[in-house]
Length: 204
Length: 212
Image (cartoon, rainbow over all chains, first blue to last red; front, side, top):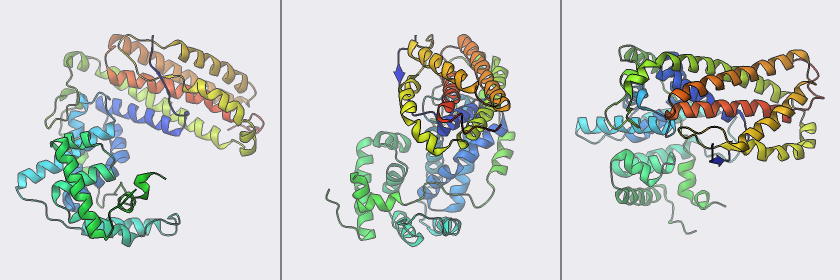
């Protein structure tokens, strides 16, 4: 008997969407390219966001995004649903960025133009629809530029943890570093960001 | 207020959009690359630690690949159809009547929440689920009988499709009881069934006066 009776949220469209995603994954695993295209459409924005913030180069981020989905396709047979599909995909994306960095031997040159362009595109889309109190594009670009100036190690940790919500353990595993290193990089990155954005130390 | 929301740095970082739209068409190149790649099940243990859990029965897997495809394709259609029905039904909800029914809906919540959290290898549905399902089914049948014929037929067809799909997945799961994705698929199917059963609880029969 099923002994583990857990709570789920009220059945809603999100549940149906989760069902649909699972179904798409199963179909893609069986070789259905159209199902995989639907998965691509669901996840490309988040994957590109991660790659862009880790590389700060749009051309490279888009290349890494393509490689991520190609690798995901090739390895779908290994995905058994024990973690969220998005987490699995993001781990591949991080791998692609790190592989590029390793293969090219140098640190990626910080370039914010690609990120700025993304925000300008978003602004033209959002014009007149943004809720009151939303940060304007200029403020968002300031944060992106400050992020781009961080040392690579700290930037990766800040991006994955603070922006994309992964835990210390998950980030450490994704980046192949110790949890302690992850915490130190996060602390360092946040301190530098505060300085660069002119924000004082926060005291709760 | 949440401490993270009060910290100006967290607020600033939280203001960044998480998704970024591509500026060029990325899919066509991906599609070209995967067309030249082996199909997913033939290459299950990938490099760079992306093999989440290496399969220990590759031969058996490739053997029932076509079954997967059939199940997935069928379920995709059914879930899509059920979702469409769900959306149409939800849109017919009269807000005032909905408020008046809130107490009833809240009473049904514990039933809807009594869902299995996970499936083990040889586990079957628990008593709580069976009771929830029976209660919802009875309520569904009572309410659906009052609906116009076309709406009723559509809901009953979706429900029958979902139950047939659940039976097919359950049968396949019986042959491969330790496949987590198949377990998840079955759970999703049961959840879709409960969602469809529960959807009518939010709808006043008085407002669904016309066929959907």
